[in-house]
Image (cartoon, rainbow, N blue to C red):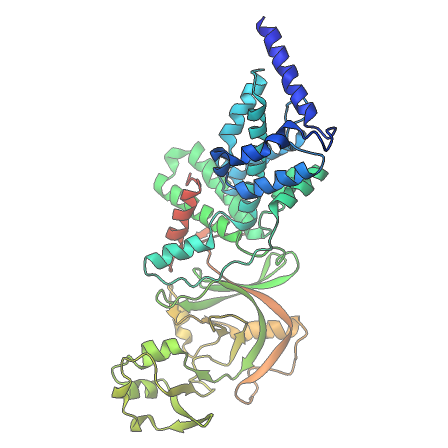
Length: 491
């Protein structure tokens, strides 16, 4: 009797799915589409991670000749669903948590199916919905990262800390359309794995994560648990940061990578480092911003005009403003009728401006050996007015902690970068920083090279050597708090 009941139940389930196949007419919607409005009203639907996009996906399917996506007429998983579940399981190797993608709930439903237990049609519909929500959640996490820029900004500003990180610009994807497209071509696994960052260093960090996890699991007695956990946490944080970077940059050619915590600039060509030098970056109270841009031109023998931050926090807060100006070879100008006229700083009553936020004067240093920008600076569009430049204090590159600037990036070998840009990209060859030039001679680059100012606190080289850097701006703590809320585990 029990067997016959199970058989009837299975037949009933098959009949339901046959009715929901592409054979139904416009006048008689399949059970799933007929119930979709009620399903979307359920609190359970609101608890989906991508509820709006999941609703959009099924609305479109029900406008056509389809309804369910992941189960066949027998009420069993399609090969597409099997691919999805395998990819969800492998998401752990990407630094994600499979449980975020309904893995337990889906497994329980599948176990019932495997044991020939009767599952009401509505439960089978929910299984299909869970699989769609899981796909779109995983797709977004791989493509955009789990961390939200607004969350990171709120975390930092709530603590009264500086947040100098431009909003990531990721190519938008309509995840309902993306899912529908790849279901049509039955390339579910490929559609997800192709969304992962395409940088060689991302793959090396992912391999390092696997190695540390394996070591912690297989040789716990030989590994410091606390240290291992911290390393794994850093790997998880930095893997997610890679998901904020635009795709295709490395595959398509060369870019300049300034990693702020490691105090280094690298030129990377198709994943291979071809130039490296030390940098000096902004101190914690004046952090170098994190951004993506393109170097557009260089300036030879640059003069220097003090930005408002330095005027406000260094010049006007100095105990003896005149002495400060003299020691830094800074000249003072006053704007009259739209023109700048030099004035004698000793004739100014600086007490009127001491400790103030601004003054009516412009402060400049002429091109030359005492100029803080050195012989060349490199500019790229950004809202923070930061750039790369040389320096007149090269001894500072001997320091280990080089978070010393007011936000701009000082280079230990600016001439090498300049020569590379001139020779490699068919830029003007008659411009040499060692040749006497007029002050502020601009050299526009025919090839605008992508540049990242990144914030990576751990790296893995081609020999699988992992290096950890100090979290000089405190972004790791903030981002880890966000990742933990999303279910990422530091193990």
